[in-house]
Image (tube, rainbow, N blue to C red; front, side, top):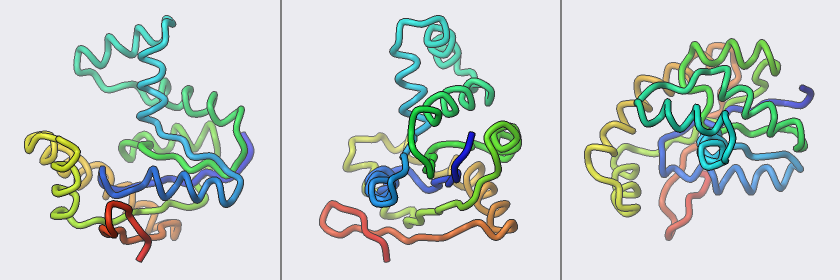
Length: 170
């Protein structure tokens, strides 16, 4: 795989999709959401989709190899740079992906306060239990990734805030 890989990190509801879709269009690259790719695979009528669906129903974690395969397949047909959202999910996901695809060149961390994250997620109809779980996962899974990438001098922090209903860079 050739082309720069940029990890996109941030709490749910921080505006990553909108910002990165615009950024990818501006630079002629591609925005890829691991969550969207997994959802599309589950909805497909394929053996892989049925396996993924069963894993999810059983509450199992999708193996890194399956997510990596979905991402690399999508990347093969799209222009670089690749802005990848929702992956890696943990530090141990990063090495296998980078071994296969290449090292991350940059990581964007979109920061939004817990208070604004809760407000946005509640406005989207998310229940308090789910909101708390998402905030916990961000703190225990995403922030260690951000810290590791910061140690490699690859992390670029971006603050987001409410501006009408659209997130903006600060």
